[in-house]
Figure 1 (spheres, rainbow, N blue to C red):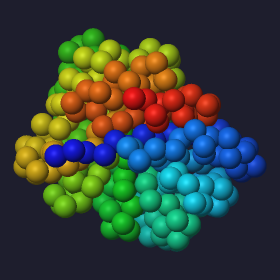
Figure 2: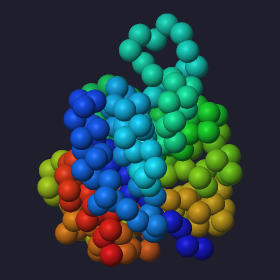
Figure 3: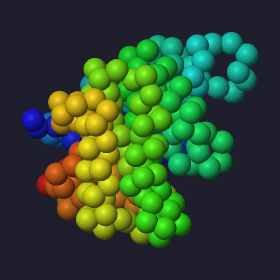
Figure 4: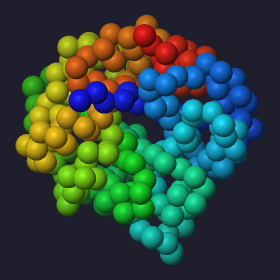
Length: 249
Ligand code: PGA
């Protein structure tokens, strides 16, 4: 079964609303493609102007985070209903920076994943090992645990529409991209884990991205791997290079 590639930018805490509009204007002719879903995950305050600026293009706007409650006394948080009402389709959940700086855990990731599905949002669920874990040889065990907890109580039908982003922490923003073999090995292990949880059809349908210092030069080989269905791109998503990454072939 052919899976459509999904290439998503993660802007992180960059771009004011007016800068966001200018960047989308600049990138929109460069990211035209029929072969991949193209998503720009932007800061919450940029979502509405970004959706406006991306109207009539193939760019879909995603969020970088959301909270797992419906509404109420959670100062500073953004609810899934707010994202949906604004026109958001995708939401990054459990990025390693959220885990490191904002105390997100596998358990809160699972709550957010369930809430996203409840509202019809597609979660881009992040997992990844630290350098120490890789050196200890526990990468696959660690990732399998992250995946199993993230998918607790998620149905097979939901799971097949999910996106998983494998992002080795040591490769994020470091310019130190994982080797193609390392990235493929872990993405294959993630697919096998989904297969154990849900069966072969779900494993064949779910899309798995690689993230961590993806560039115009590393994208073609990475995205050609059997189990890598695109990328989650940080730094390079803010530049014209993102057009080359989207049109990597
Ligand atoms: P990077 O970030 O491409 O700048 O390494 C990737 C990410 O954190 O999603």
